[in-house]
Image (cartoon, rainbow, N blue to C red; front, side):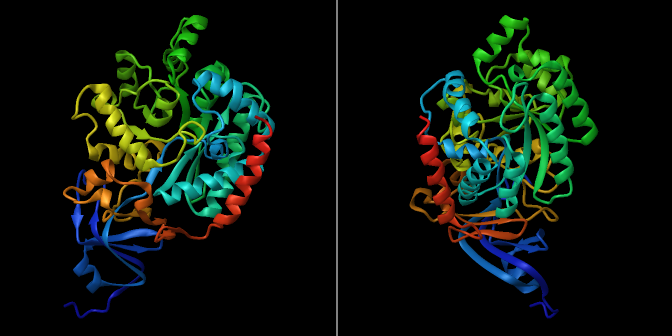
Length: 444
């Protein structure tokens, strides 16, 4: 036994398994994680950890797998308030006949703050520790994230047309740069440009976004080739597929996150790969809106980084990343006609490290490595639906339910303990949701 004094740290986690994501497909048994000042200071066998460290908080999770917090790489958090209000419609009708009219009437800073609170509570409860958000009043979203201590990347939306948050593309872009200035030193909040889609933003503002993104070192987050109708409409009006136009405008680069990408030709996949573009796959929303299927297997074989998102709760209808990664794994096999497509570990990587890479945050999050932020979740694999456990990675992808997440830490701060949210007034959130439900219901 070591006779030297034990090292004082903030938190020590002992568990049955650790799935660190890096190295790939690794599972560590009977290991522990030492956390100090919000970062991982060691990953080591539990017997050694008990002998080496003395912690202010110590957790023994002997039925659990520890893994990085899930990263929801695309969504519209405040749209949680629109969950179930417009089901079973095609995307074009869903947006133009229901969602956009409701947003025009009701969206405000309060709407966004309260809707984002609801979304954050759901996401933390299901093991998500970082999310990318594209929605109006992103400063209100940032306030909700900071109040709840969860990471967010704000993709400040850009449209050609006015909304409650902006007047035109120039106004939206200006507000995006102000948002970047406001949060550039934040530990929890990062920023991106969020031009909504090729069909809602003209050439001139897109060129300006490319220039500013390079100057400010910001990602560009955009819905691209979401549906066949989007592509066909572009061909009929301009004679170009949207990706061809984006390429000519200089958008194809490692800064670009193409969300959905369900309609891709072989040459377009090659172009995305050559440019280092990221793709964000939202399988459940795409299935619900019958938007199409992202060719995940082809993209990965081409070397493209593919991350995972839920999209908004208005078109999913939940923010459950465990459900999303299971759907992604199964759908990829069906689309490819190959049971070997998107194996379990790659699906888990999509929901963690691939998301961090897409957001430009992989130096800090996405895997459990010494020096990285302690964004960690504990998943109880003793539930009946997960027994017996032969391969923990298989259970995490194909069997686990979000309710099995028992503990969540973001930057070493405990946000969920034994399934109970910490520091969030759940009853007050529920009351605000009911308030907004009454308003929205009166409009439908």
